[in-house]
Length: 245
Image 1: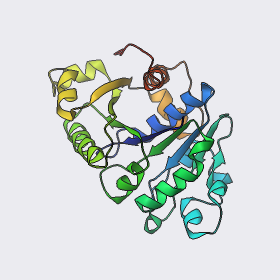
Image 2: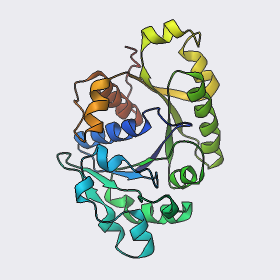
Image 3: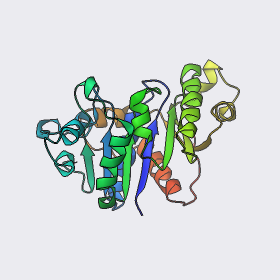
Image 4: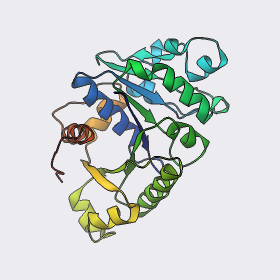
């Protein structure tokens, strides 16, 4: 059965898109067919992160306007068997309405095991569209107050969209920095503020960020990808420990 997951964050800069691409890569490496949908109209970036910018002809807005079929907007990712991308429009005024995105997703979802929707940061109209087709959600935060407050806010908005299965991902975590900053007594305080169940703590990992930003597959042996593999397992219902590096 297909699984549609929206990746959201209350503010920019949390590494949400890196999580989306990394998780999609993990699922694909496990033999699943995965569609990544970029919902950040005007700020699309997943095509760069997946190394397919030069191949793009159509985007979601073209399918909506009738310039192409929905299938024409689905691109295979080079070197990543089983991973595909539906790119966002380059122009912000081409932002897709929630019900329209829902119809587009419904039209292609049966071709994939997982559909991962990368929401724009915040809770604007782009977020509402990204959340509309989703069955469950991951909220990505960093261990600092503005990000955690944003996560709390976006969690409430997701619930108002009818999504109840919402999990927390703490990204770019460094234990020593967390202790030195002293912003929180412990990670349980972040969990309590966001009111979300924790599914993973991804360590700060510049190697993964550099690999994905340059359009290359993440090294599956790096710490962040290992954590994403555990998140994948937990999303599939398998028990995996929450390791903190």
